[in-house]
Length: 269
Ligand code: AMP
Ligand code: MN
Ligand code: MN
Ligand code: MN
Image (cartoon, rainbow, N blue to C red):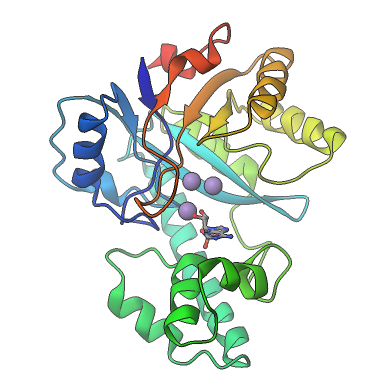
């Protein structure tokens, strides 16, 4: 089976519209798809036609022990009052954060950032990828990678932390919306083994049920390591491409065989 429970549309930092993503998924024989935009459910406010099974989803930003963590909520009721309220506050937090990033990057020559980003934006999402594009357009950086490395990546001036809703509030809102919380790309945070284990324990205690065992194309060693953790902590396994655009080397759709032997998260949908 080919499935994908993690990808982005232009409602956040993806390239394709939600309909465009669905068309691509159909072309690539994806059988079940969840569009999981950063902190927004706007994709699901559109009139989406799909011949494949669509699962609602969202990728929520949070912070745990001063580390930026992403939690994917799957199979959520997109009209849930509690989740919509949480999304609304994340949106305000994003806007405040963007104001701060814009101010900090002024020192390095970035001009009219908020106005430019808002005028180009499809939806309400404002994020670091928007600043990266602008840093390149204004000739301050050579490419997006350079922008993240110098100004926006972990620990840099444009990486503003400690502002998101807490992990417990996020997991509670996902559960109240009838969904399941999945810890996204657990190895992306570059935690030590013991710190990752602490995160998994806390995530589980707060009601998290899924672990993203596969995120895009990853080294088989990583998949094996995450599969072991998934079993040890009795999580359900999720897999997703984290597809953003055709410019990336990641492709939409993951073969479910990669997690053979684990309890798949989609069995509960
Ligand atoms: P934000 O939601 O504003 O915190 O921005 C995070 C997003 O930036 C991630 O979801 C990635 O899509 C993107 N991103 C993070 N690091 C990089 C990088 N080094 N190069 C390009 N995009 C990145
Ligand atoms: Mn992204
Ligand atoms: Mn993420
Ligand atoms: Mn993502």
